Amino acid sequence: MPDAAGNPGDEIPDRPDNLINRTVDWLDDRQRGIRPIAFAFAVIKKFGDDRGGQFAALLSYYTFFSLFPLLLVMVTILGIVLEGNPSLQTSLVDSAVSRFPVIGDQISGAVMVRSGGVLTITIGLLVALWAGIGATGIAQEALNTVFGVPVLQRQNFWIRKLRGLVTLVVFGTSVIATTALGSIAAWVGVGGTLGRVLLLLGSVFLNAALVAMLFKVSVHEPLAWRMVRWGALFGGVSWALLQSVGSVYVSRVVATASKTYGLFAVVIGLLSWIYLQAQLFLFAAEASSVADRRLFPRALVREHPTHADIEVADLIEAREQRVRNSERAWRNRMAASVGSAADET
Image 1 (tube, rainbow, N blue to C red):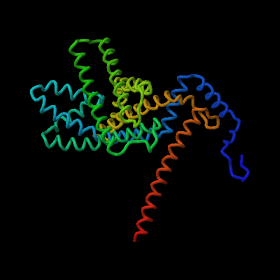
Image 2 (image 1 turned 90 degrees about the vertical axis):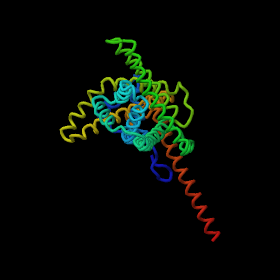
Image 3 (image 1 turned 60 degrees about the vertical axis):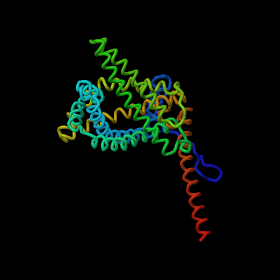
Image 4 (image 1 turned 30 degrees about the horizontal axis):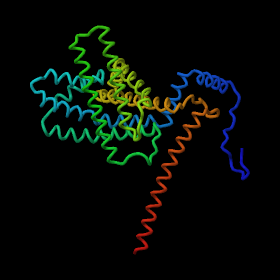
């Protein structure tokens, strides 16, 4: 409705009463009443509200460029340290590339052939750090957005880079832990269905711990363990399941792309795999945020919003307002400095 001055109000006009809208309203009522479905829909909707797809794409881009240099450095260092134990060296490399089903053998072969000496380590490490720090920077930006950390409360350039280095150490430690898990299982001799189940449970636990640590390191405000537990559990289970059944997806991507792109099919498969993992990681963060703030149920249509819809809208508006205020304060400072410089002349 227009106000006294004739300006349009903020009320949302009613939708036409037809079969499609009545069906949507019925579905909306049903999903709000079923708690697991309402929670899942709220996570998906907030993922879109926080531009999760864009962050996942950027995270995949930097991760892709940091992957080969990191593997190159790892293989070269292992070749120097474990010169007399090639079997252990191969086991460590295989554990690292096992996260990439179907295309892992091709990645391993490409990296193993190109291992070198000090120059290789130096160049590979510099490139890996450049791309790896870029990936961790995007992860920090995405997670701070998901958990609603105000822009002005986020930490400075050097602290962000330090957090990025810590993130790389955490991720590298997880690779070592995964290798140790497989080695222990082989040493104990647990096999068959029981061995696969135990390895899957161990993988879920390690992945959940990794996701929780990444949340706590990357978000620029303290997060209690209770705030990240549901997201860590989702991330641990989803990454483990993706690792177990993802070979089917990647093999189909590579097989389809090979007909058109030839050798580039491996690149397409690798990017697709990294993008899937990045999306699951951000969905895990959204699950923690939605569960902690109780941002569910959400409405299917904007004409009938819930309290959670209003709260998310307020969070988005506050985030954009803080950005505008920051830009306005910067312009005022620059204008004042230009004015003082003109007065001095």
